[in-house]
Image (cartoon, rainbow, N blue to C red; front, side):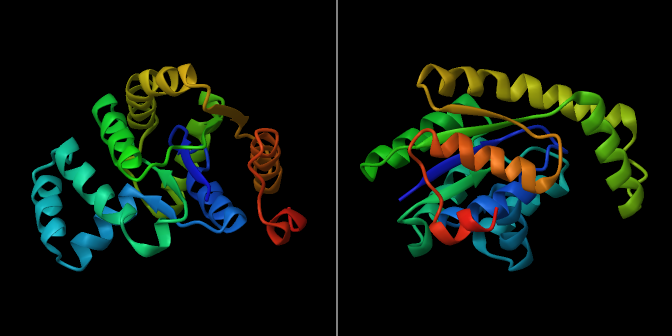
Length: 201
């Protein structure tokens, strides 16, 4: 019955840690980016709406993002817990998530904030861009994305911090080390991984 939110800058390793935490706590990792891609690929009603915004080079509005996440959280595998990655991103989305959880009589257990040195993150993303052949991911573009992240997420971190939910973890180092830090920080709050998962980290 664990409900977590994962926040961190691009290149901090959120995707990798989301997968590991999903296994550790036996809850689904819910990424808005993955949901968007799934719906677009399968040409669902929601996917058609999302594609229209993406094709126009526009952000998917909060109302549609909220609708998609609400639908996902109602699915059977998320009833007993979940890990959110990429949502909420705005104060309005936080309010909507609060409303959804309150309607179910639940709440977030913790917000895991992965922090990483900016220069290290830029280096990671430049390396990833080179490996994936993404020539448009230049250092300037990456730094802009990081500044946008800071602008968008700082208010959320402050908000969740005021609720005593934020657990800050250093995202630099080996993947296993970062996972261990997160699990230890959550365990200190009484949120323990399954015995099997804990024994493998």
